[in-house]
Image (tube, rainbow, N blue to C red; front, side, top):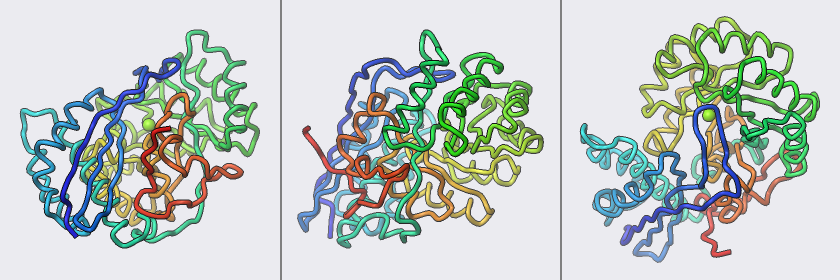
Length: 361
Ligand SMILES: [Mg+2]
């Protein structure tokens, strides 16, 4: 089977309100769709989020450069295709984020086609280890009022949405105020509610230590990217020695070697390399295997259309992280997995490929 056509396009959907984390703000859901055809009539379809507003450049890079590697190739050769695309990320004066996202988009497309050619899902291809995984809703964004009552209501709404867990945004207010936000979600969600926090690199080491000490006893599943990126490996390792709350990081790394540095420094308990930032699912799988060999867990942040499969293929995977449809209208629209929410879990519904279905709805 050979790939005969590839076409990527950027998309941008305005959100009903802005979503404010500690150091950033989303007003639109942005990303890139990619479609492909093979000489055996198999259609590939995948998409990837675009956190940096580079979608047009990424789609152009796929259409003008990466396609030259893909056309004529058998997608079951996905790992060699990944290495053959690697020279396209080597321009030291180019925008590395564009090149890595373009490689990632091409790579996830190949995994989709590879599975569909076998008549199976990516989960089947990788080896299914779970038939369902818990839902973690990325939520609790900051608002102009930052009302604790509103945050409690949001927590209860997420449980109605089918989530039994929240990854709460922290780092945007004082540590003391953020600890109150954690307590509010814990009280609203109850003792069994799965609660993690993501500071998105907002804190100094001292601030992070203040936070984790104040949150001891609140049952946090993990604290994600707690410290500034300036010296993050050393600071994560130092923080990890001083708290029992699991430390999650890796999403800001762009290579498996970067993940290895975090692991070798004993800086993390959970690795969440981002398959878009790091050039695809192929390196994500390598990082997951590295984590497994070192007794660590893995997560996949912000790309539920991928984690709905990857978390089922990893016995050491954490939750399937999704968003409220107001924050991410694309996943509910194109992924049947969103409707497979049952009692706080997402079931395996994927039949072929990634299970992403183009929808005009
Ligand atoms: Mg994160």
